[in-house]
Structure formats: C-alpha cells, structure tokens
Length: 460
Image (tube, rainbow, N blue to C red; front, side, top):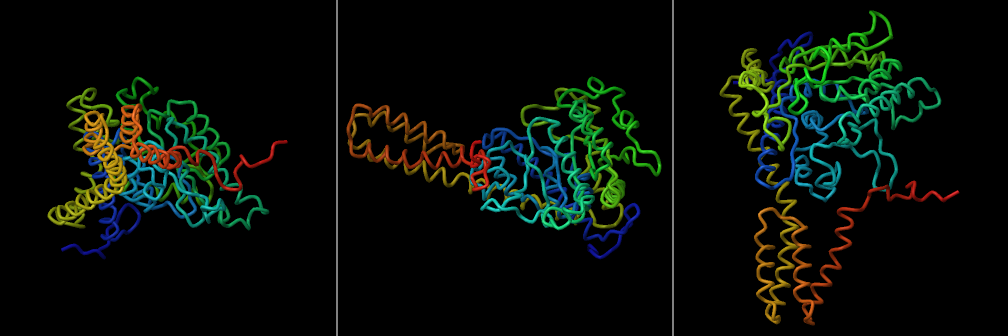
C-alpha cells in the first residue's frame, strides 16, 4: 500500500511520496500523449506531429521552480512542462494536433500553428492587459529553430528593469519587483546557430534572470553532434561563459543527465534560486536525452541510429529510469505503478477522444447539411448521377475536413451550371453563409482587432 505522506530524501530536499507520484503521473501521461499523437498522425487524423517524449523528467524538475509571473520562451518539445504547470490540458494538446479552429478548444492558436506550439494569453477579450503576475506566461512559440533565444533575452531583461527602475514599481500586474525568471529551452542542434550564441552572450553581459535548458540527445534530426558541433560537447564549449566564483561575469553552468530525477531536482532548484534572488543567469546542459519515437512523424530514427544506440536509449529512457527509482526508494511497488499507468493511459485516450469528437462533429454536421441539399437537388436534376458520388464522399470522409465540403460544393455547382433549380439557390446561399465563417476560422486575428490595434493609429 502506498504511503503518500512518506518522506523521501531527493538530493538536498525532502519530498513526499505523493509529490513524487504526482510527478510520475505527469511524466507517464505526457509520454502517452506523444505515443498516441504519433498514432493519430500515421492513421491520417492529423497531418504532422512533433512531440516531447524523452524530455519528461527534466521538464518536471523545471516546473517545480516555475512560479506564476515567470515566463517561458521555448519550442515544440516542451509539452511536459506545460502539462506539469496545468497551463495546457491533454485535450487542448490534441485539439491543436487536429488543428481545431475553435479558440476555446485550442486557446494557444485556434488551430493555426503547428502542433506543440504553445502560448499564453496576455490580453483580455477587450484588449486590456491581464494580470501577468498571476499567470504562468509563455511567449508564442515560433517554428524557426533558435528564434526563441532573442525573446528570452528581452523577457529576462524586463525582469531586471522592473527591479531597478523605481518608477515602474507600481506596475505589479507585470512584475513583482523583478522576481520573475525567464525560462528558455532549446535543442542541442539549434545551439549551432548564431542566434543562440549572440543571445547567450547578451544574457551573460546583462546579468539577467534567465535559466536556459539545452535538451541534448546527441542528434539534430538525423545528424549526429560530431558533424555540427566542435568537441561534440556543449559543456566544454560553454566553459568560457562560466562565471568566476563570487563574480557577475557569466553563468552558473550545470551538466545533468535527463534520467537522473534527484540530480535534476537539485540542479534546477539551485539554478532558479540564484537567478530569482540575485539575477544570476544559468545554463543547464541536460545530456543523455533520448528520443523514443525519433525526431517527428516524418521520419524513423531506426534508419540512422545503430542497434547499440537504440538499445541504450531504451535502457536510459527517463520515464523507465524514474519508475525504477520510485520502486527502489520504496515509494510504490511495480504492481501499484502498473495500476497507475493503466489509469493514466485510459485518461489520455479519453482526452484524445474528446478532442477528436469536438473537432470532427461540427464538420460532420456541415457535411450532412450539404448532403441533404444535394439529395433534394438530385431528385429534380438531370445530373443526379454526378451528385451522388459527391454526396457519398461527404458522408464517408475518413478524416473530416472542411476542405472536402468546399470542394464538394464547387463540384456540385459546376455540375448544375446549366440548370435553374430552386434548390440550387439553397446550396448557393449555404455557401454564402459558410464564407464568413471560414474567414473567421482561418483569416481573422492575423493582427489585433481591438480598439488599441496599431492598424487604428491614424497616418501622419
């Protein structure tokens, strides 16, 4: 029987069994989201998938130190962090994977960004500022790798400005005396870019509260570190940025394995405390990262990784290692963890199903509306044989897509171009009703539509 109030020494701190098992829940659920997400892409329900499997444990350690008011400037591997903070639900994660255009389903981007691109909302619907000091904040992810780095510099510098400029102290909805930390994440391959080195240099010169995590799995897609990185070791390359003891001339730099729960918890606690209290930036080089499903759904890592490497990745999988550590520390038995895993797997699958039904049902309903109109038209048209396959296609779409509805509408209207049926006008009117809805789904809010929009500023 699990004793949830049992205390376990983890590095320099005591943690309850309940907290440790909560971390395992998040790690296992996140892994299931990755596995199920890949399945959804390969089965045709989604078009592309890129996930954070293999990085669950370091992100859980990071989340323990992420406070309301802090900011994240990361990239598409950070789903576990977002789950751990409660900033994104599994259902919202899958809604974005399906590109659900309803902003209540995918509040990050309303289906407009690639999956696993996260963002928080800083404005109220009327365009006024929310209280950012009460939120887990994340700047909107960008697809170009490395683009998060200049943002990290700006977010961290903002915290320093709020601490040092007396006239800003009253703006507590943005900062509480500069106690906020800006957390950056980046993959090892993207550290070969100029944006990375310029930003790291700026963070070190400015001495701002940034904690940068580098997830290093030894590859950039299929390219090993040896072909893109001098010495194949970022810790070695970054040594020149290490601050002198007691000085403010660089970073605190940590190197920690992605599978070592205790070391990760300890390293993040120390790094974030120094960044928050003293505005000392830190870099955590997280090594021995695995990528269980390869880079994305567009490839297979079995094609470029050796048998020995794949076997090593299985052995040092961070979720597997975390489970073994939990058993060894007496937090839970294998049977108890098996039961937790079954519950978590069922939970994630239920969230996926809810996201899919919420996405697919409105499209199916629209397809049935058009099919009913086509049915009525066919009974009075000489082109019934041409309308029948269009109707069949709309009613049997394996993956509901509004594109198929629009294509069907156009095909039907083209087929009836020489006929003047009353029901033809019904179809035309239905399309006219659809057009503004499509505009709102796919074209609206490319820029702010509030009264404070820059587009409303009068020309000089």
